[in-house]
Length: 309
Image: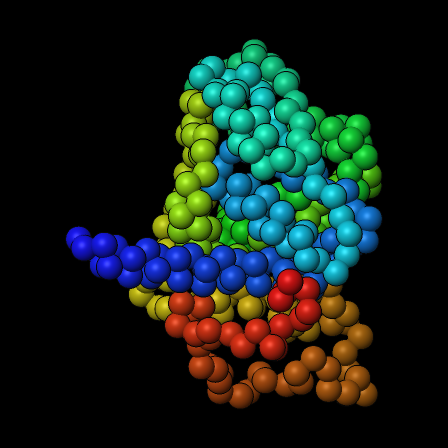
């Protein structure tokens, strides 16, 4: 390839990177604004696992912090669970290169899990509980006001279908929540971001990814099945994933069947039209499916100020 040809290729790659970064920044900024995730003076503990999602979350938050309309601090935290083969030098080296505050927490949960869980049984449940407890304790020790996790839009939809298919609940992952003990606010800044965008962005940034199978546990097979189903729908029906996520944001309790959530018993002829009225005898109207983000560029002028920083 000639020098001019290489320059054209490099320019095209840079254009693609800028476009992708802008989309992830915009979606992250919109989620932060919609759910008031970050406030003036916040000290945010960014949970860094060493995977593509948490690397991307930290990267984007650092970028947003530089021109955000509010002042906040970031502290990257990694939990070294003493799994055999864990490359403990990778994250400190990477974080030193960024010049940001960080903390590596060393806790041998690996041995505890091996001791408590019978051979052949999945270790993920106990490991997750131990990890959550340690991270909550660490958040208190470092004075964090928010705990940021790297779950994205696909994680939210997968959890919704897992709960519907296997738990009998209409329940997903909230972008923002208070911990069970009431002491911590947990946020998911990537809630509006697509996993395929994160995969591309992570590859372009060449993060020092740490493999997630060091403990030898198998992935959640049911979640993997849901992921395959959603990916297939996304290929066959562009825009369907966007529409489904939009549905998570547009819940109509009066047109479901949870009598604890909506007071159906009090409905009578004097109640009036509520939440859409009677569609029981109407033909279903299927609106035009939302386009995929790959097929449309949003007008930045329509976004909130925080998404354009």
